[in-house]
Image (cartoon, rainbow, N blue to C red; front, side):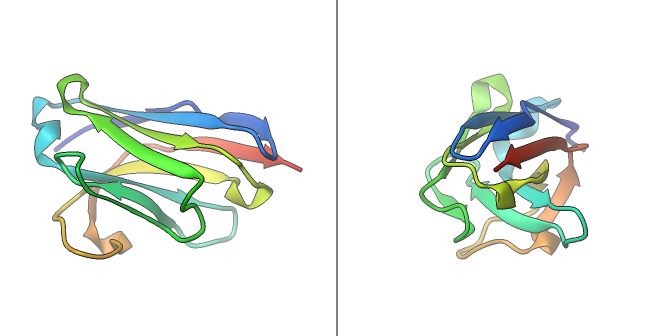
Length: 125
């Protein structure tokens, strides 16, 4: 099982940027499609972005499309989420996770396998 550790969260003003990082423990990281999800207080966890194991294909939730960019470096066992144009509604705990398989279309939460512990992102208005 892959161990995942997120970092890079914090407090930022609306319109600002943050870069989240996800470090994976195993060299088999490159075999996994990966993704980011988030959970705001009192709300269900929701999908944010996903990336194929090769890095060649990505999916985004409509709410973040054009503002967030997911990327990865398999040689470093790392994945990132570059967030810009942040809005107060982006406030949430952000989780990185492995995808159990890759298929066409936006993943559902049941497609994800191993999860990190999460990192808090707070956007002030």
